[in-house]
Length: 234
Image (cartoon, rainbow, N blue to C red; front, side, top):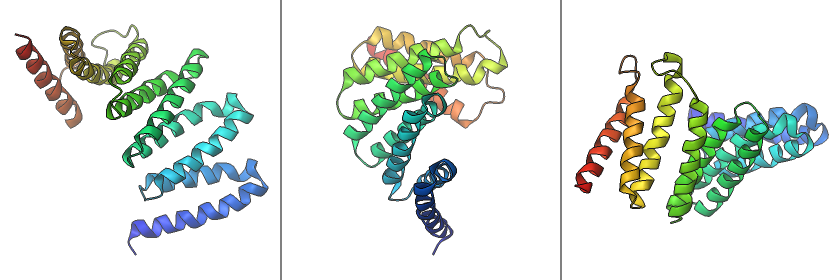
């Protein structure tokens, strides 16, 4: 057996043990069961979807019993399940869970829960990704448009050139880049060019110093995308 398969086997045994213990004393053992299930799902095995479905079900019960403590943790679990279903080819199921995650995050964000707005951006981007695959172009565009709006509110009034603002602005740039692609596919060329140009401008605010390969790749994509759109408009 490989090291990974050994680890998966141990996690499966631990999960089985914690299920029995949690049935008798959920307050004590359910947190350990959840951590074990999430660790098993992260290993990327064939049962990833089933494990995350169990995680979501447990977190639903916890959120129903005590929303103030547990509702915020349900959101990332839903997003993870949507991604797993997408990777497994269950696009309809992935879309449903992503939409549920977005709805939950909207509520939490309106209540001022810390981190809910960032989770909403992630949920909306995942929902857009799935809706594009199931040929719901309008839904994909609407989700990304909302994601950009929420992301803008996160960036807020950060001062251009502030190094602390760079990661958040880079994230907005990538969200804008995705929106530009969806606008182009919808035939909204002028809007697509404007949004993509804004994305590139955000990336360039802080220069190249200290940036990693991902930043370079994203910037190269945006430069190419903008050049192609401007060429086609002529």
